[in-house]
Length: 354
Image 1 (spheres, rainbow, N blue to C red):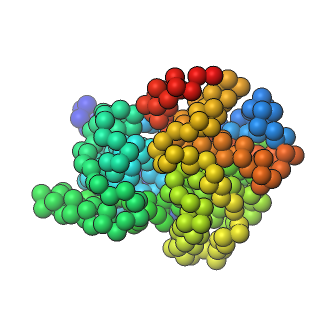
Image 2: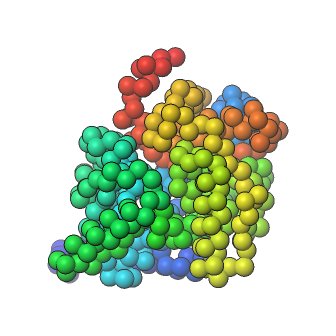
């Protein structure tokens, strides 16, 4: 076999899909699963809960890992099934999802066009720098609402231009056409979490999930319902008011359940949302999130970021203070990755020196 033939075979193996056991949907195997679950006793003591476990999605593989890789396994499988050569996606300019998607496209030899919201910055740092390093074509939109229908129209226009050059595209939008697959990507994680809980010897009372678009929480809630897991999910909003995020999570979870032909449905009372740690706004660190990044680092050697996971840990602290999470509880914190967001906000740590 010649070297080009070996390379072609390796690329074909990477693009091969398998059928997911829980959802019955096709997925690729780019994410490195299962991810570890680790005890964090010193951090638990500082937060004030009985036991704390960290689900290490930051260790899920390529492109610096993160919770988006499970969703991308399903989204890319669907795109490959349709014969797509280029992925066209949108989110904020420092999107962890878009960085991960660009990394997946690079691994699979696909094109990637990212149409990003300029409000969160256009300087080539953090995830935006990685998008460029992974070979993505980058354009910007002045739209600021992720759910604005005008963004979908802009994506369609970009896709038409590629199609005019005989390049088949797949539009990827977590707040639009890709929502159901994004939910399924995390619903499929329920059996893995059940196995984690058997390993640690208890079913935790709560699982904490930092929520931007909310699809990770929606998928987990749906997967837990399907699998009979009783752990209560708590979403910590990094972007949207609780009422809006809660409605979106219920709608997308139930649409995914319908698409999967599952008879379980999610209700707005089946999970909690904490929106007290959004701080100055989406994509901006707060004094509390900076404090939590330091706390995780100094107690457990964990690397969080001040935009998502730092706000998630701050939300857990607020949930304990408000009684949403009892001090006697056992808690799992989903470490969703996001390390590039830490380094791009380094100056903020200098201005909040401990």
